[in-house]
Image (cartoon, rainbow, N blue to C red):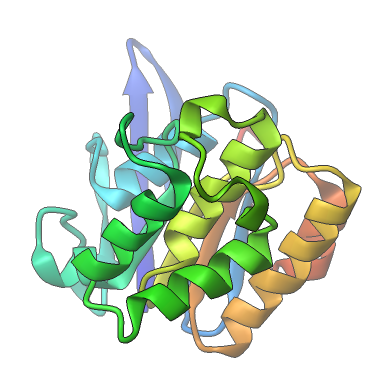
Length: 205
């Protein structure tokens, strides 16, 4: 499903990564690992299309992946940048807007289910700015889970989650792969990688 071929990215004369290639078939998870500064987040942004590779290509179903393409936007759910939410919308309203925008069947029921699953039901009527860092991370994940997806891309999804939250995340990502989703995630948590990843791509080695 998702293919990355010969990708290179540099800022200045020294590349972050060079000639990286891997596949993420449907129903599998691939973890990007490596020390800080080796380009994991940048690689994710380039795969998504919000930045450009200096060389190489990322493809979805054999076609170059372009996040401006409506078909790509309908297929790829991503949490890579800092959570972007409308300042005047509550948690519930933010998720409801996403569900409706992606034509989710019975959006209210879908939103309620995601709120319960992510532990955000108690703060559903709060504004995102009032949430703790862990709650904001859960909202970023909920923003992906409330919409249809064939590819799920996450940048350090374990960040700010407590022990119970990380255990939930591990099981949720395995459920994603069982449902046929291709998961690509950057991660520093060895236990999460061991539980979830079918393949590991190491940067900075």
